[in-house]
Image (cartoon, rainbow, N blue to C red):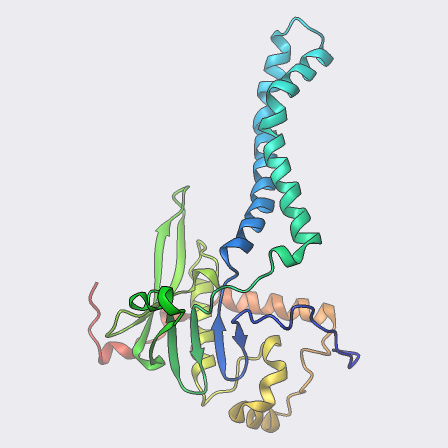
Length: 282
């Protein structure tokens, strides 16, 4: 883009059901078949190194009591134990990585449809319903649960991981109906609450049409299409190629500053304006 040339996207003809522009933020995941190959590669790699580390002590213990030579003992242990204990995850890692790197058509595929949408233009939040009273299975009709954004409240749900560490996830829940969005797929659960708070700030800023679009690289090409943002950029003299022309060193510095602002976010020190209008029930 910096050289004013277009790099064609070989998968541009595939609708992955994702939109992130001046009008809507629509989110979708890759299908289970795509995740299968990613888990095969990543999981195989993780298990290979885990099993490798776990097998070092048993290996030396075994050869210390063997009457055969170290070389013969190693061959015996490898053929009888390591060939499958390390071989299976290594094979999984190799196959998964080969498919991902060299056969993208086998795993880069669209899912059945989007999961949720935040619409800046209409002010509506939509959760796509694939149960839809059985209609999706019958004729492929995807249900839509829609409500105004101002009727939703944000929550941070905390639950322990397998090690007992608290994992925080942002939820958006409708105040009167059973409509809820779990943002765990968009922002991975973590021990800190600040990233979830920052995501909530981003969502509010995105949906507030009285304010310009969040100043992020993905919105650079859409800023002139949003009236509020276009007026803000005209008034402030913002460079329309601010992100596009940014050099790598400056970009890294800006990202570090963003991370610092997230770490210092003051969400829980702000007044709760909704407390005057609603009663929260645990």
